[in-house]
Length: 338
Image 1 (tube, helix red, strand yellow):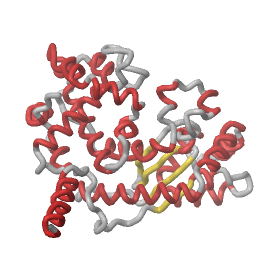
Image 2 (cartoon, rainbow, N blue to C red; image 1 turned 180 degrees about the vertical axis):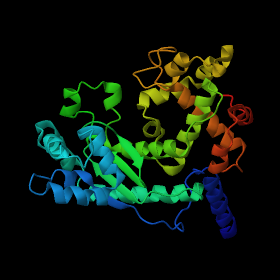
Image 3 (cartoon, rainbow, N blue to C red; image 1 turned 30 degrees about the vertical axis):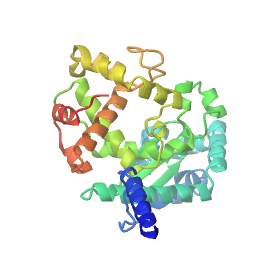
Image 4 (tube, rainbow, N blue to C red; image 1 turned 180 degrees about the horizontal axis):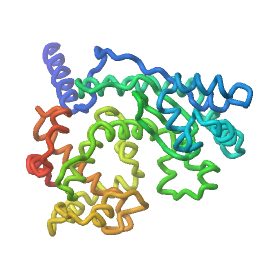
């Protein structure tokens, strides 16, 4: 009786492990150089006329190319070393709205919260090294107040996030900017990691396939979202792709119909960029299908195709997935039939 009981437990555990998340790999033995957290907004908003020259030079060393790009792109087109940069930078940090936004950033993103975020990013880096052994890893994590200019960036071996783009959907700043609901629902801290990972992957794997059709876009972004899922295996799909729970429920409910839309009339081989844009662009919905259909629907469909492909070809690694440039081959071998 006792042996039978142990056997039952063993079989139960075996079944549970078989049904587990295959993307949730063990990275406990993966060694990386931990990210160095840096706060540009702390240094930037401490500048004044008296300390500008000395601190400006120090910040160029500390933050590297990102700081020089930040100033040139958003504050002073003449660059950080031009004499006019003093007034430009100080005008930015003295602006009432920017100063208030920086206060809001510091209130939401405490040192404790940023330390937790850095730890989670280090875990993502371990998973990245597990899947992409030949790729280099960033060594710094820079946070800043972007002036509502950008969400995330990957530059000069650094992962960068504009925290003023993640102040919660109820932020007074977003109302002041009259940002639409479909955009602000993704402007919370829950989306920081998915956005950082997607942005990073997009800079590592550019879409250079010479066959410029909808299938190419669909498969490429399917690879991206599948890989973001691999770096964040326990994050809900709705956060990974930026859909509401209702939008994701729509996709699952009508998955067969959605696939039928793409499969019929050879739509996957559409080369008209306007049509491609309609099915891959951001917005409140995909008008070509329905007002209930979420935006970027081709990317969601691509994600499902890649999921099927990886399940049917479980010996394929993520590196091999990206090395396979033949989108038609991936579609055929996916045997995707919802």
